[in-house]
Length: 209
Image (cartoon, rainbow, N blue to C red; front, side, top):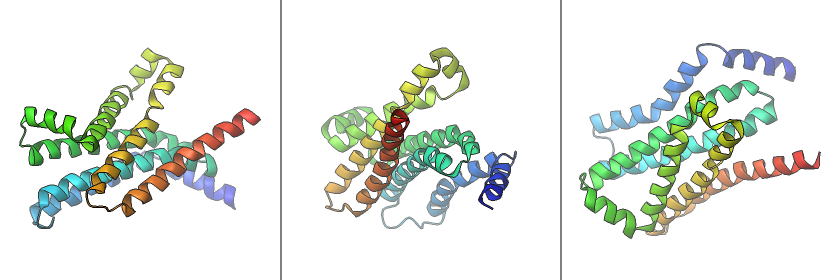
């Protein structure tokens, strides 16, 4: 029965419709925020709500991307790998929107002030460092980059996504430290820690075999 269900699900996820559906689902958070702006439903400070919501969705998409390999392995759904690149690019998409919203609504596109703010505030510096790494990963996520770098070097480069995850949690932690509110940070830390810990355990298991 399990084998039948897996085969059925693999067949559905292999269909030509699957990627467009996942693409549209990944855009829903942005659509919700745009709707919130249009109908004035983002609260008393819509700019702050927009910036933080985009940051939250960057973290959530990062969790989804890092969950692909564990879920694929544990459920035997190799087909899930076909969605990983697109989901990874959505992490960068939401991170870029998060940065653009900060530069626009918080800093009014004053480049000098933005540079000073990045250098003065550790949580912004850490977030910007994560964005720089994400830019590198997004720029090398295509087949041409894989061929140019070679498989092993490309894989080594894209393991920096784990550093992005750690920097993202640290960015969130320092941002919430000002309000002494760590509950949500703890949830993301546990999720990302579990996803990274699974990879460590799997690597140890493979070596022991």
